[in-house]
Length: 217
Image (tube, rainbow, N blue to C red; front, side):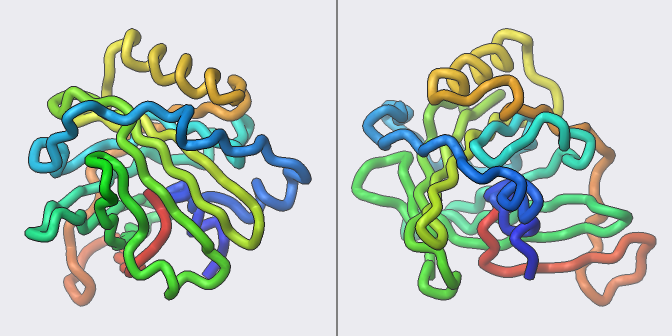
C-alpha cells in the first residue's frame, strides 16, 4: 500500500505522501509534546461524531499540492473502554476510500495512541492530542508519528460543518506557525459533496474501498 495513502491520517491522510517524503530531504523536526497544548477537562463523549477536515498543516505538507487534497471526514465513535473507532472517508477519482483505525486513550484525557501499532511495519510511535475544541463547531488536533527513524507531525483543523469562521481559521494558522510551519505547509482542502454511503457489495456510481487500521487522521 502506498505511503501516499498513509499520510492524509497522516495525511489522512499521514497519510499523505510518498511524493512529499521523496521531495523533502529534510523535514522540520517535530516539536516535543510539552509544547503542544492539551484541551482542559476533555469530554470524550462530546468530541465523538463526524468532523470535516477543514484545514491541514504538517511538515510533509506542501502548499503547491493543495489542489490534490479534497476535504475528507473523520467519524469518532466512542467505545465503552474510552477508545475511539475512527473512520475517515476521502473521495478520490470517483472512489470512496475508507480508513478505519482505533485511538487508545492515554493517562491524560484528550491524548491517544494508535491501537495495534505493531501491525504497522516501520511505525515506532503514533500520538494524537486534542489541542483545542468547543465540541460543537471546531477542533484542533495534533498528530505525530515516527516511521523508520523519521518524525512526522500534522495539525488538523476539524469542523462540524465544511465552513468555519475566519477567526477559527486564523487561530489554526497561528498555532501551526508557532510550531515552525510556514504558509507553504498549510492547506485548506477543497470542499466536495457528500461521499457515497454504499457499503462494499452495494450498487452505486462510486467504488468503495475499505482500508482497516489505516494511519490517516
